[in-house]
Amino acid sequence: MPKPPLTEVEAPNPWLGLGPSEHFFENEEIDGLIKRGLFYARAGVPIHFQGPAGLGKTSLALAIAHKLGRPVSVMVGNDWLDVDDMIGKEVGQNTSSVVDRYISRVRRSEQQTRYAWEDSILAEAMEKGHTLVYDEFTRSSAKANGILLSVLEEGVLISTDQVNQRTTLHAHPEFRIILTSNPHDYSGVNATPDALLDRMVTFTLDGYGVETRAGIIAARTGLDAEMSQRIVRLLALLHDTEKAGHASLRAGILIARVAALRLRSGTLSDALLAQITADVMNGRGQEFTAGQIAKQLTKLT
Image (tube, rainbow, N blue to C red; front, side, top):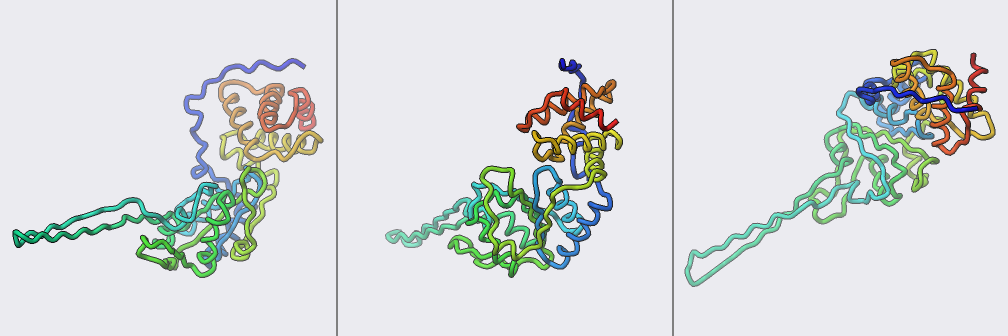
């Protein structure tokens, strides 16, 4: 089956309307997760959203953080993070000298060095009572995340660096922490120690219903609800075939974004939608032809 031509369309601002903070979708399913998360967060219990990419873990964490009504700080896990990045570190030195020549034949000098210290995002959030969203925290090493043990248990950050004049930082009563992780899809992800998991409540997100997925896609792309639901159902059909793995919500958003752009400038045929979907899915290592996807589309009419 020949590929349909991809006609050019112009996007004056292709990023417009894609900000998650401005287009967060809520329905009964999402609202239930937020209320449960808020219940634990307000009680001072660390919460953790765990699941595959594209399910909106970060958006959920930020939604809960903003509803707590405190300033929000965000840090993202990475394998280069070290203990210093969790606590703080020396960022410079200031040296001053004083020379006393009160008596001409006697010279007395004094030199004093002061070290400049910069708190980490974690330390600042604890001190000021911010809500900290620690996104993809399992990308960081177990050594760096080990600092969290006393933070999650007693609300205490301990520093052994001699430059830091404050060896113990007790958290502000309003300090809260929300963590997210994706244990499967990223290289370099570290297993979460049981000692950390014991100190938090974990919500495992393994998929939303069709209406929720379609609603999120519609909110993020401006595509109408009917077409958004059609894309979700198409991806579900492809997921059931032998060739397909898990199609993330992010893949659906990308397909819908292009489809919405096409609909704003003309029409969207099933053949073109099939080609767009094939291009997106094949870029994720799943081998589909536009013809195979077009056959699946006929089941949705």
